[in-house]
Picture 1 (cartoon, rainbow, N blue to C red):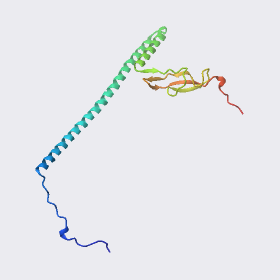
Picture 2 (spheres, one colour):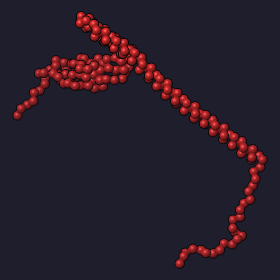
Picture 3 (tube, rainbow, N blue to C red):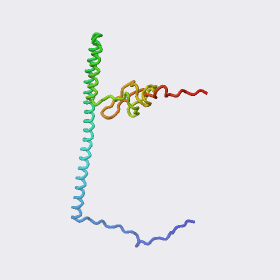
Picture 4 (tube, one colour):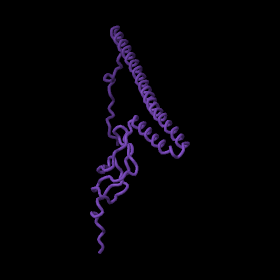
Length: 182
């Protein structure tokens, strides 16, 4: 058996459809005004979104142009070094060392103009933020002191762009303990 109420509902309690009420002229004016305001705000939003998109694209183009210009300046400076190396290779042996020294000085000047400076490491305490230890050697220097630079490190402005590859002292040879044999 089914468990539900099958009692018929009288017709007088049934929901009667409402007759639509037509808006007053004042309500029509307010509705039209609200629609116009909504359209205006939507148009302002679309213009603002388009302006922002254009700004984003222009900023990306400007950034790309700035990077390209900076790279171009550095490339022109490096080409000057390449030209001088060619001249040095054509020079006689007597002037070769002088020419190469001048080229080295020119390169150092170009690097300095671009904010690239060498890291001073020799006879300094080992600093893992600037140095990369590639050897641990006995020396007369105190333990942890840089005793040799295998490859110089460089900073660009304040950021380390290449760590100095260094040999670090482990102290005098007499302080180094020999392995104990049993």
